[in-house]
Amino acid sequence: QVRLVESGGGSVPAGGSLALSCAASGAISSTYPMGWFRQAPGKEREFVAAITWSGVYADSVKGRFTISRDNAKNTMYLQMNSLKSEDTAIYYCAAKTPFIASQKAGDYRFWGQGTQVTVSS
Image (cartoon, rainbow, N blue to C red; front, side, top):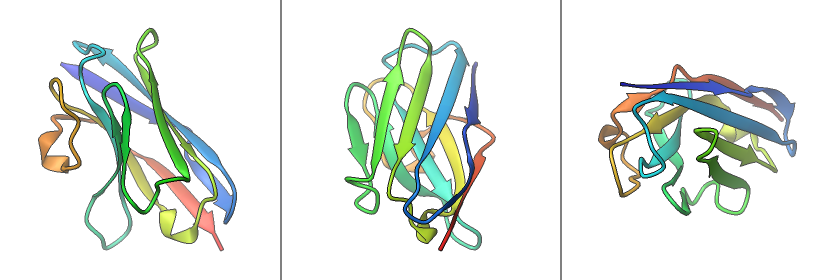
């Protein structure tokens, strides 16, 4: 089993930055793709970014967000810059079985509990 715990959410003004972390434990290795998804009130969960060995991004965050992972620490990160009010959502960390990252939430087997990100305009 794999356990994922997100941290780092909070409230920032538009244009600000936040960094999220996702600590993984259990039966997970560097070959497990990991991703970030988000869900705003009244909306479906949407893909933000994913990484196995390199990152892929949703068009809405490309150039503003950076995904990375430290395999020695079993931790994934999401650096979010130039935040906009439309980035407000609960952000979820997810992991799937090897090897290819996916933009589909249904492909991910393991999920964290989520962390709130609020951007005020």
